[in-house]
Image (cartoon, rainbow, N blue to C red; front, side):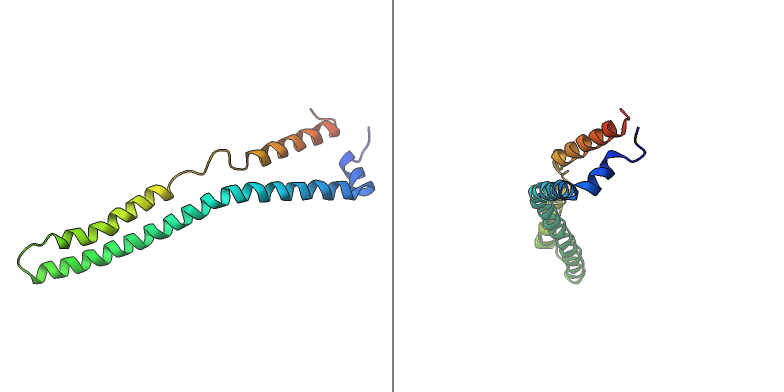
Length: 126
């Protein structure tokens, strides 16, 4: 049994094979990240809309309270105007809280597991 793991002998004798393997991993990561990237961008935009909607709700509610205190009679616009950004913020919050697809980076995980199993087999451990 060799003292040196077989991967080290490949690293020394054929470094281009390892570099090709690493390049394959980089391509796989880029491919899977681009498919998940659109979902991440959508979620980031939803969080931004949620934050702006919540801020507008707070500002419009403060203005409505001040206007309601000045005028004696009730007007529905004092409730409706702050309610619109609140509904928008709630819808954006629901969209932003969606989970990423479960299949995100599944191919990369499978490839890493296969490589780990191969390295264990080469090292003599099942």
